[in-house]
Length: 473
Ligand code: ASP
Image (cartoon, rainbow, N blue to C red; front, top):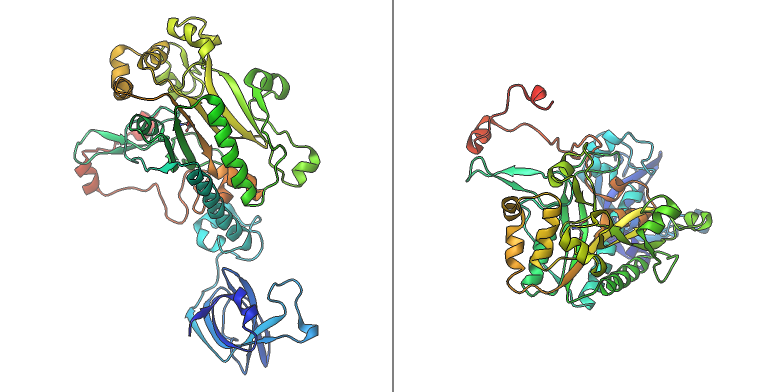
């Protein structure tokens, strides 16, 4: 007999069906045992008599066969979509018996210790709140894809083992077995590859891109995140912003979000700082906050460069002259700043063609029109104090491509973990990621980072320094 989904039982009254799922809860009344059987579509009451079901433990996986009956009027449960029916157990099979559970699956899980939630994430994900988020994320991706396909974007995957891309964070590096002593970097973003796809004539590119940055951990942030990364050729800043606004607007509405503004306000960086004290801000009223309305806005006209923060190793490395980029070294200055940029004058006043998308107080995305003229890109690195040799070593491949027919282009990356968090009305990114990292950088369930064998180290030509702790100082 084919499996019937719990929700479809509503149309099967009087028929015998086979249901599969988990024991959500059990109520033993001696002669009769009730369980709520749960599958991905909901719960249904199952009625076992003569000892049937009584051995079952919570969260065991079972298969039940029997007729779907309507419940007596007084027995209807108005809180359950299937509250007017039940399955009468003729036969059942335990497919997987659950031992005593280390964490509770019922409830929203907010009172469960984080370490335990992550260690047993597969149990934690069973709870209704988490199931909803996992599915919301998938639906949102689908809605975004639909918009992108409509606008003739092409999805392209870019490498995970690559060379350092500057996004202002430390790289995660991976040793190469074939080239002992050499390393790949995991991508901080697909920035350079997506620009090279413009050289390649793709014109409209997108990717649901995994990005990996070795940043200092905060309670809410791991080393990996997902971006909707996109890039377009032959476009102005306004055109990219218009396209992104339409894609985001339609996709969030498709998954049920309410918007504060149909047309996103555009606020220059300086004004944002004066008005809100930050370049991300929350435009919602108290009432709108309660209703989980999404208030998007653009921030534009950022300074291109800033003084290096001496405490930030990645910045010190990038800004050898004492200047480093604020957002993205591959951006173009706005046309009005081009002269100063070319002459490396008034550096603090050079404005980048960068645009950030903010939502409810968070940065939801950021992008720019890029420097596709090799001289402009080279100048950016000169301003940061790179020698010709250093420029060649870090972005020589980009400069070369920009001499071989690269169209003007620009794009953006949207933070998907953050957007899903806002859509779900949650306040931690971890709630939106199926298997997030703990606050101390440990992976869910599996205990990484962990040691590797001596053979693996030998193959890679790596010796672990005996005095690691003192080396770090
Ligand atoms: N690569 C940038 C980032 O990850 C986004 C962009 O400029 O497209 O923040």
